[in-house]
Length: 149
Length: 149
Length: 85
Length: 85
Image (cartoon, rainbow over all chains, first blue to last red; front, top):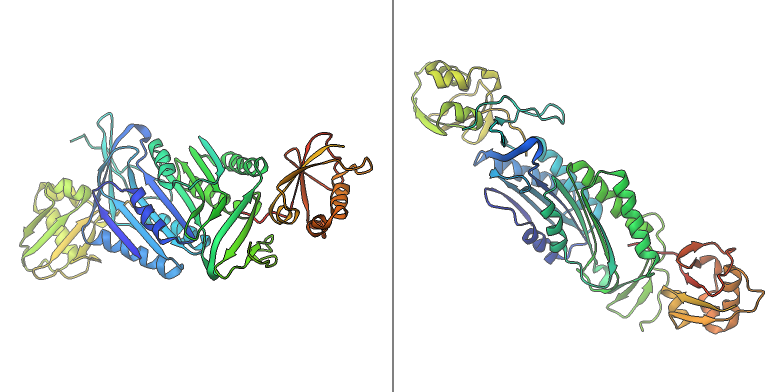
């Protein structure tokens, strides 16, 4: 079972985990990413392309499913406006063996952080708003600051 | 927050995850291990030492908490009799950064598989019962087969 | 040539719309030429496409380069480099 | 010497009890000597302790070696090598 989803709805981690649990697979590994409220961030807005973003996620999932022996794989990315603490992304992989599940999750979250077709806009408590620039290594820099809107 | 628990009760993964979610940490990584029904296994029984098993788990958790920057860590091991598909172990680590959470989970599940003070007894559908021998590398061998009781 | 263009992220914000129908002249035949034409067309285009090398494009849901031909009656998406999940 | 002994896993199954109070003679002074004494005491002991080198021990909740002294009035746990989680 491969389930890939992208949309503005809140991610129900417990429900997704319950679906894997029902499979009774020997091992499930997961990763949950949440909005960090660093530097007074008040909202993170993720913009996506209705076709390309989902296609990219599906391709990543297919790559992982081909590389590791997985019994079930769930990849959900939220888009739209989110407050600090809210869940942006869930990666959940189940397998008969722990090594496969863990490796698939690590691969997927690393690739998601760089490859997936999303644009991030940060809004801060003091009114600054800016689109995040493409990563240079592991370092994010805000492209430029424009007045809040 | 470090939470370590060992006991015969079913592990409520959703509740443990909800506790980490409430913290709003940037990243949560988890591992769930379930009983595998290989070779017609009908029950896995885990025997523990009331003092040493918990102490060993607490030491593992403290080691991980010292090595990685974790906002929250949960380590729960079930003991007693379990059917295939039931959850034996949960490792859940949260951190501001994904690398820390993922590395801590991987470290803990690897060490749990070898170091923790538990003895496994397998019962199969055809009546065979046996205590699992100490691991030789990554390979488990059943010590000897004795008639079911 | 009739085209539908969609804009994303700061390109969308600077253009002031998420999508629009355009009809560039016949000598605008590639994606790169479309970007140049939009950049010269008006003030918002000048703002959005001041640095054409920073613009990425997809035609009918496929990523393409600047020399890709424009699709007759199709869709062109223009956007900045992605910033990951 | 009065001792409480607890058994685990197949040692427990072979001994037929999870714990018992014992009073070995005075020349049984270490954990290793206790294991030998239990192995010679009766049939279940012979079965459980046929291979003394496979037996691990803890005294009052601490892992110890075969030459560890027995605790006066304390607890000794005897068990096979652990098999992990």
